[in-house]
Length: 152
Image (tube, rainbow, N blue to C red; front, side, top):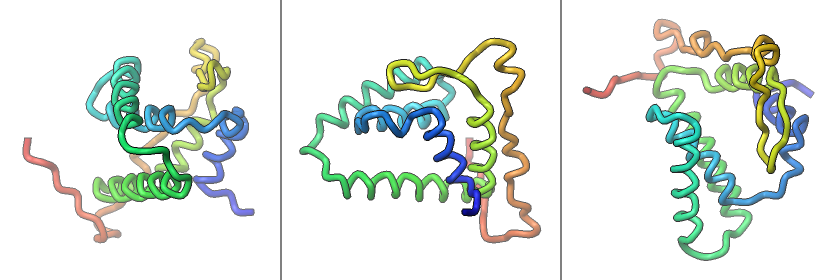
């Protein structure tokens, strides 16, 4: 089996027992929303708190979820994320390879169903930091993307 960026992220999930956790849509939405909120500069704890509020509100909307609708929604989220990376000039496959290296370099413990990384200096010395610079498309070699900065 070929090792891919996605298979490395699945390995991370499996190695840490994350796939053995009960699926709770609200918790998964909170995780995704936390990451989105962090793009606006909020620190993790503040972003988490806001994400939980938003997730709770979303969970009050509509009816019980159908599994195939959940699969479709998460596949769409992945598709939009790939498109976003392309729009800002990054190769999504290479980005995921870097993320896989970073998350697989961490040690930690499962606490209340969440992986909490060890924050000791010894643990941090073994962390790999994703190098997203090497994931950028070279505009001269790949004219399939266009990055336009928003006017600020």
